Length: 123
Length: 237
Picture (spheres, one colour):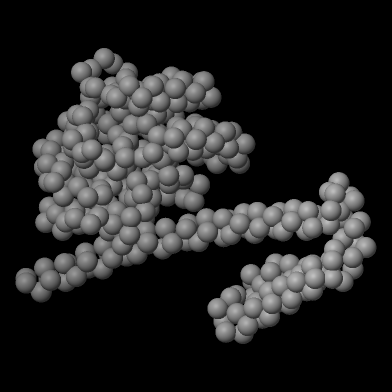
């Protein structure tokens, strides 16, 4: 890895880290979702300053050059995070469905009560 | 007297709903009717109110299965003994309703499904759909060890025990067909098909018929496969 590549990776890792902290500070991102992103920033940082480890990882996965190893792990990370979001979306979809069903039933209950009251009032 | 509920999920059915309710009342005056307006953009909800039926309305469109489930949730909460589901597109003939209730009230079966293929009728089914019905019917029959000819039929009646399962989170709300039959069979439910005839749907894209066939086939295979490995609920202990 050239010095320029290292510098670029360090800058990117730092920027991701700062962006996450700022989003949490502004309450635009929940703490629950930050750990994965922070971990990514830390891993990028570690791989850049601990170059021998990156070489070792590259050797272990059978990649030829270090940047390919980084690329593969980046891709894997994106796949995993998308899967995690799909799980979250499914759970949220279920909750929205249950809420809307509950509202529909409660709304009927309210209308039925009103109608009964009106009828009693007429009598 | 055991309470009966007829659940009609409806999406943009203002033109058909009147005919459907009128026909139901002609053949069945004992049952309560609940229309689940699934976020229609026409006047389906208003129409249901005018007709004096129970109206359960979704703020947004949740889909056929979720609309049905709302009806079941309502029925379970209100302690109905039997719940019949039918479509709002005037495809299902209300003249069969008394037979459905007569069968289920005998207490021998937990689910009665109206089948278009059990007896020969003049009902025309598009070739691709018929092939799907036969294929999933065969798969379902093999798995449960009982002949099922029309697993996609949305004309069926269930008792309270089955309705409770339908109202729970294990009910698949996107295209509840063969997978539900298999799930119910594994739960110990006794299922029977009775022959029915239906009208051809006059809508180009009805709530039940407008689904994408490719996704349907994938979903059904995947869902049936998963049903085989899921924890099995029990209707009777």
